[in-house]
Image (cartoon, rainbow over all chains, first blue to last red; front, side, top):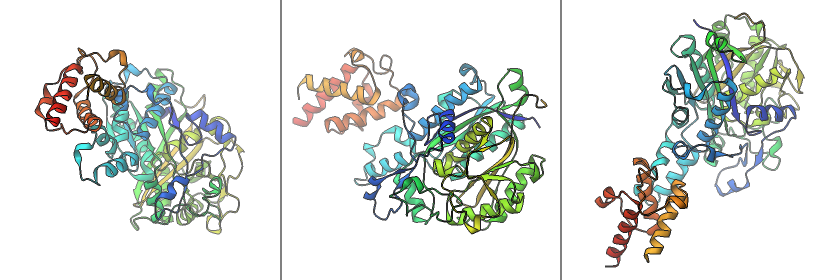
Length: 412
Length: 85
């Protein structure tokens, strides 16, 4: 098996248009949570909060590429451009067939889907639909747009697994590179805010509804007063690459991916369970050939739902005990769903490079069911390098990635 | 509708839908070779013209023979005359 490293990262986040801007915002404790009063027009939608990202400079993407991109694919393209620059790869070399793309989102563009239905269904008239709406509605719209935009000719896969989409993408990219099928892969995910997305979670009693007048407090992972998640948007894209190639071209290596696992909980379509989460984390550790004691930080999935946070806390407690620092970045970023794994991984890596762990924002009183693990509640200096990142999704899907920040002198 | 109005509304479609600069919108411009439209763009051109002019042209075979921007103006003028007639 070949060794796999992260050589580039990019993000469009609710708190910044680049991975570096996002890290600056997290350093300052800023958040991207906003009131969405216009959503009051939707009957039965009780959650009127979101974490939108800013759409800007989209005209810099040529129209021929941009025409098939919805908002989230534009975010993904911009994050990929940042990751490309960060990796120091030449754009003209990407069509070598050895560079692939794996990306996902919860669904096709929620905005385009809503537009199509709103346009077409009232009159049941297909003749008024535009061709580009079709490409924006496809489930693999982010992956295909990204690959065509970058001119990739390698493996193209879409990991559409709701909130586990981008961590699954990184895991799949890891497998493609370590098996030797690809030399490098652009991987991650994207998502867009829309009332229909938040409405889906609200319908399932999983979205925050009690903080519409205080959006800044609405996303509170592990907190006793949490009442559900706040949907966010953006994109996170990483360049993962085979170690020897990265070293040979003198790339600045950010981290090594040591292990990954994704699995089904096998018990319930929506409720996460501690045994399934623990099994996934243990399998990722086994893949990395590490004992739990080697993990110095856990980047939790923790979305601020009543059920999920307690189960993840219990699984972390059972696997790592109560000493390993744990935090969730969703108090700042909201839940960027299919993008969250990659966006949060980029944030964690930036934090480690800057020598600190980001806290769980809005965690004021640890809920009883979330106790017994060491919550990071303030920006904390660290020399931690080896960490585990979780992402889970409806449908009983778990994913865990184990990484180690690269430092000079690491055995190559 | 006058010829000038047809030209202005058609050019607006090309500017809005395909981001083509006004100075490139000349009657002799080939919509594929000079203005860069492809097969997918023609689908959206038809939809945009239908909306702009309130006509139904999706199943009109004459759409397939359009090559230049001038052909688009002529086609719309013909459609408008047929509607009035």
